[in-house]
Length: 198
Image 1 (cartoon, rainbow, N blue to C red):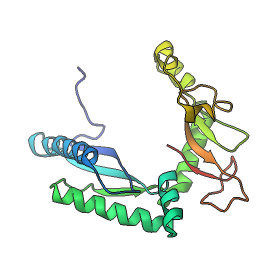
Image 2 (cartoon, rainbow, N blue to C red):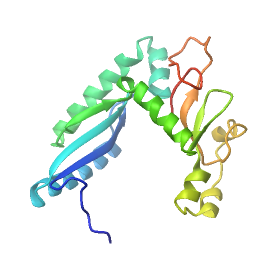
Image 3 (tube, rainbow, N blue to C red):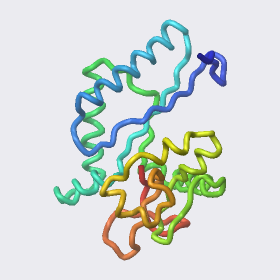
């Protein structure tokens, strides 16, 4: 077991994934964030660390967009409604709120720059469709990851539709290319129009 030593003595800067806000919270959210809250409290009150906790909120996602189209409302109306519901639910469970929230919609230029850095460093690649994928093979080489284990997993029927542009079945979308003419949510990037992928 490794000894935990924060980069800055006495302070922990912690990033936690948050919900994709397209629907009401469920028991999985409760379990995850109550568990993280217990760890947070132990670090703060037993080990006396100052905690700076940032939680990501995925407020741009295919599920949110599909729901907004179905209900004929702006996608941010859907995401704001369920984000607030999530915050209220966590408060009822006495989960301490994070120091700050980071919403995808507020960080598109930063996300694009980060993806470009991954491409520049060889950890991602762009496709003619405008999509960008994380390169799991390169990650495995760099981190001595078990290639055989990584490649022996099956491919879902949904994944098989896009395998022709992915280099490896395990590669995942960082950026989902979209047709410039399509009437849907998209942002300009060096690879063409699209939106963040997960």
